[in-house]
Length: 128
Image 1 (cartoon, rainbow, N blue to C red):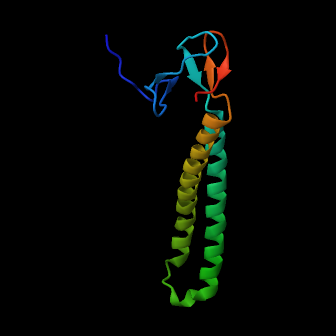
Image 2 (image 1 turned 60 degrees about the vertical axis):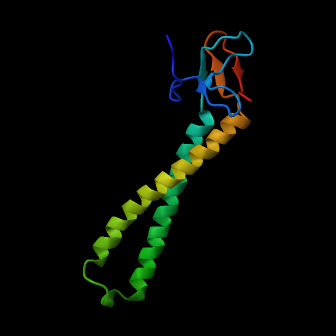
Image 3 (image 1 turned 135 degrees about the vertical axis):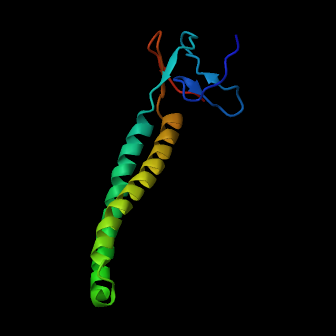
């Protein structure tokens, strides 16, 4: 029976220069490991909050500048445009912030934190 590498399966790790597969526990040698990803989750959450906040602050500033620039020259639907642009900008900012935060969190998981836990003996370890 052949098994193919599925990167979404828990414990499966891609390591450049080494064959892809499950991370092996250095304490007991078991391939039954789990990836914790605490840094990736926290980075994604903080990045989402920062991205939404930044986008809403930018939309507020843009609305104030647009109102001061001359509302008389703009079409009557301009207030509706700013109302719809703010949530769309917040969603886009949140998505970009989440992606950036998750990428940073993944780097922290891989380099600093003990990101793997053995399901047999409970040992936590890094993959190098």
